Amino acid sequence: MKKLISFFSAVLIFGLMWGTPLRAQPNMSGGVLLRQEGQNKAKSTKVNATQSKYINLLQSKRFVFEGRRAFLSAGPNELVSAQFNYMVVKDKHVRVHFDFPGLNGPEGLGIISHGKLENWHFDAGNAHRSITVSGQIPRQGNQSKINFTLTVGNDGSGYLHLVSKNSSFNMTGVVVSLKKGESVISNSDY
View (spheres, rainbow, N blue to C red):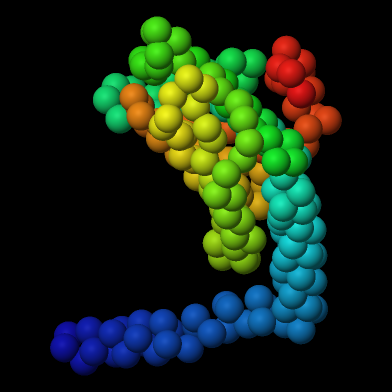
């Protein structure tokens, strides 16, 4: 009986050791490897083209961040309307309009301001790191400034961190060109 168990154990171990490479061999064929290489290269080219599009858009300082979801430090996240939650950067000017429940601004309003873009910083990132822009916005009727950092992924998704004197919040959304963001900024003075 011990010999029979030893025999089956040896067969099982032998089968596991030698059977695994044989099953994996079809995946190692030259055609499959070339196809995978081609797919990876095509995917990489597409990512690079999309990333270049957003690098150029942000470097030109002609874009709109449209907010979709707000995250306050206290309380749950909330879906928001891009019509009332956006940041427009046009050349050396910037306009912000953020107004959603839970956001404390002057006179009970959200954060609404425009002016000259100050302390602009642009980081193009790379294949493993997102594009980042940051700067300051003057606050009307107040000496304080609004600080922002916008991180943009290769697909145009954005993550905005905004800090003002009275509040700070994070918001996710998308970054679009000024032309695509016309519906959001139609009521502004741009």
